[in-house]
Image 1 (tube, rainbow, N blue to C red):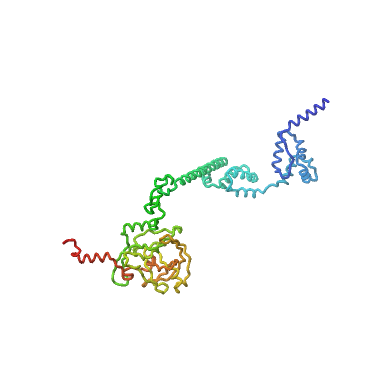
Image 2: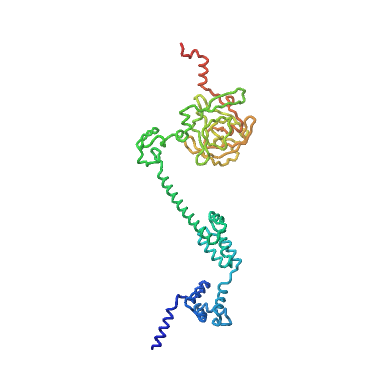
Length: 459
């Protein structure tokens, strides 16, 4: 009885000395990893060599033992050494990789877009374990980190290190990656602060300032000098006319009544003429829409002799409202596709235009291809005008003939002759080739000069 108790106690002591648990091998497990754990189990539990083969054959399970038995034929697995059995299973389950193929995979491995540097290095080390680099392993890892790293700034920093090692490359690249990530987060935070600040600086509807809200505005009950309504100042009035609100140049002209353009030159007649042409304020005036991105020309001195502007400014004017009331619009005849057409001179416009009605009814022009135009215009009152298209015509004036663009616009307004055609056809505007201009103020001045005694204030 005592012997049995002693044997029981001895068996219990042996079980207590066992450290760790090794499960049965399954074919879905990694064989190399399993054997590494098994060898560590043998070491920690001081398993002698005579017991290693029996333990292995027990732990590989039914399928594993059947495979080992086939690999050992005609011998039995129990007659082999532990290392022989391991080698047979390793060669069968995990054939030795092709070193050239594995090294090719290693050289082609680069950091992925969603991969951090630590994971990238770990993947390189895994591939390198099959490349048989030997003592040059760290040199190869270092070179591939520099080659495959995604961030250009980190790559340049590593290339600038003359004594770069594998360990140093890993430390520097991971540290820089963390710093860049932190900097980006700080930048995003700063942008959010700026967005909030910009939102706070919303323009007050009443006075236009940005340092307060509408409900706190001092001018909340002020009366507008433009529309006579309460709630805003005149500068914030939305009922302003297009001339005041969008074209300050017109407002300056109304106030000053001085700006004008001088036209000098020689026409068909030998006489030389000079007259003042005030800019038009006709409701036919249209300008290019801001949405097209075309730069708008300011109102300048529009002498015909000046250099033509490049591109199309988009300003079109019908000169029906010029100077004194006794003067009609200035007209000029130009031959277009062998047909003489009368145009209204519009030196405020850079383009020449014709109405769609005139285009359709003209047998010579309606045969020409109407190409689409990306230009968009607005009338002087703000009404959008989209050209029907553009045609390229043979235009002639005196002895000059050119191939020029002619915009076709909706409606039935008279044809407009702009600066481009005036310049390209070498047209000089004079009293001889446009409607005669009668300047009442000049005539009165002449009369008063001729009869100075009559108009003198002396007795």
